[in-house]
Image 1 (cartoon, rainbow, N blue to C red):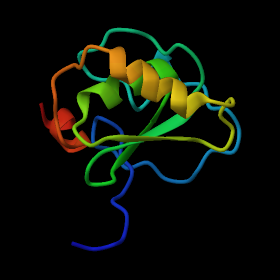
Image 2 (tube, helix red, strand yellow):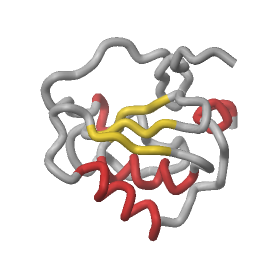
Image 3 (cartoon, rainbow, N blue to C red):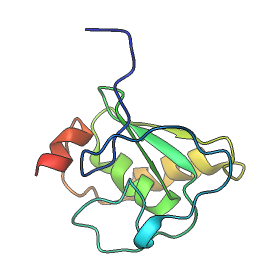
Image 4 (cartoon, helix red, strand yellow):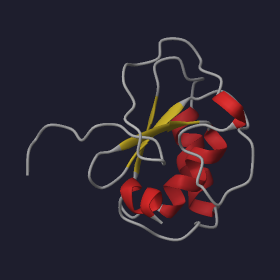
Length: 113
């Protein structure tokens, strides 16, 4: 296995490129971390990256990111540079009490479902 990080993708499997330096509003009301079966709109700007066990990531709002993190086995969350203070820990804590939308190891499994 290579030490190079896996390419960042959204849940439809499209590669994400570049990094945001200012708060990003989700396009069409949904961020890249929105689970296909979760009908909720984003609850704020894209603030964190959720990484799966293979280090593939999805940037998302705190609400979608917490539900995604709850669904991942061995997931991690990191605040983006422009995120409000405490964003990653809020997502981590919310994920602990969230109902997972299924349990998977990787983002690829969600995209292929």
